[in-house]
Length: 137
Image 1: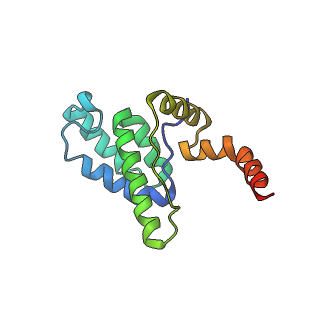
Image 2: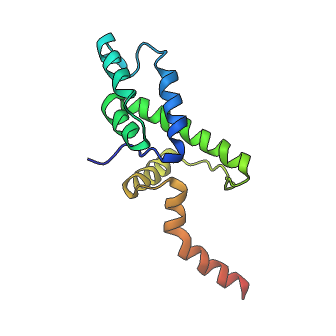
């Protein structure tokens, strides 16, 4: 089975802090299955998650898909803030897609294991380079 997400070493501290903060919510981890016993066992197991790899394994075992998605979004936002502070953030632009176009690029990006931006670059780079060569003539 493919991992839902791979916490990078660079993101370990932020992911750990996000998880610690989520324990304030009685429905974490596990959503509707978050019984007090489950929460105790999860908290105990979390104390042994001392690296990004072991934290990733903890998340795989204890968190639901919506919890994973929430954490991924929070990590991405933290990473972007960190990159902006360092001046290394890649400039971005927003694009509106109709629902079908979004479903297509999302499914393809997921299948390739890349972001939508990376997918667009991969699939259209050659055509873009050809266009640039034609317009320079």
